[in-house]
Image 1 (spheres, rainbow, N blue to C red):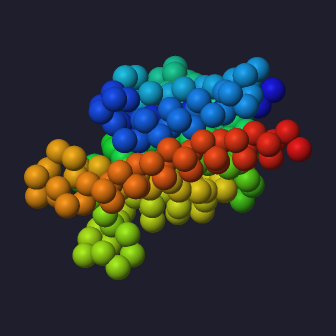
Image 2: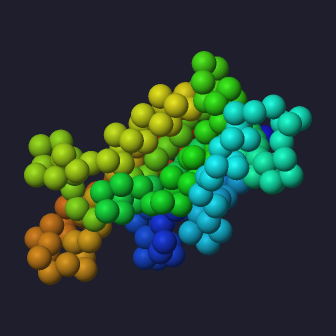
Length: 216
């Protein structure tokens, strides 16, 4: 049975979050195609992880046999997160843009799960696992737009997920999500609606395609 690792990081609930609504659509399609599968759900807003500190970081670069009790406790969390990553046959990550980059809770997950010599390094333990990133944003940072230089979500996550963890990265980008609530963006509402609908369609299609790929 295949396992899906679902990571949400939006601070808002599903009915107020563009990224959560799309990751939920992905999960729904996945479970419809694979009802006997497993879903590991990490809600980083409801249950935030501690930021990596010196104790946890040093534990990742030393022999576990030499760990102090504090290092053992800190490294146990990192091992749990690494195991979740390694168990996953597919991953979907909700990564809304906050102040031009990812939420700090998602950065905390990345810092904890990246363990040199295991999940990262010459032979990353989850190498090749497909990950779909739902990179929602209130405006547009697409190529050719005025705010293109401020796009630090896709660029960063492509580097760390692919370059660091060796994952196979794909993006779904619901944009202009502030348009319905910002009078200054009223003329962009139709573009927002098109982007929203496409994101949901893409999520369902990608989930179904991955289930079929894993079953082949």
